[in-house]
Image (tube, rainbow, N blue to C red; front, side, top):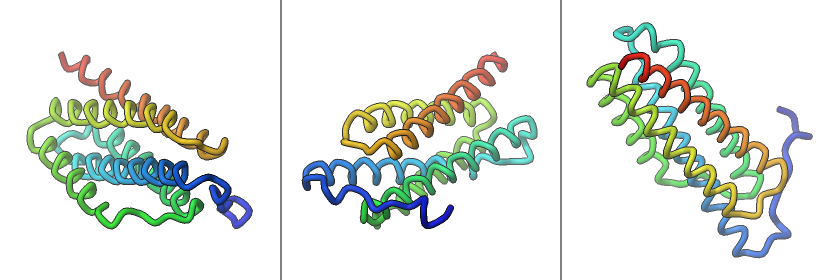
Length: 159
């Protein structure tokens, strides 16, 4: 990442549109923080067949957190002060599913990704995104769809 990759955005937008962008970016940032911890707290030596996929999913979600943190600052917003609650919720979901077993890990992943996908689709249509930001959000949504397909496929194999 270089200075030339960062752009200050949204100054020309009316306050109502900036408010919607802020709400959407905060939602995306907070939900990705939660997703990182769901996967982080699911990683375990008990399930070596899931370990690599969970690490890869966590790394992918960390990238999404960074995407939205950068976008928040580009639009001259700050992360939510209450983001710790999403961190905690992700930890609870991740740890709780890990102690409940492999099937629950997969179901938690399916639930998390399903919620993310519906949120992404709603947020893509809810604000006046510039083309670069829209492409990032859309690509991150495609990543969530790939995760959903992975977890669903693994759960079907267990049945």
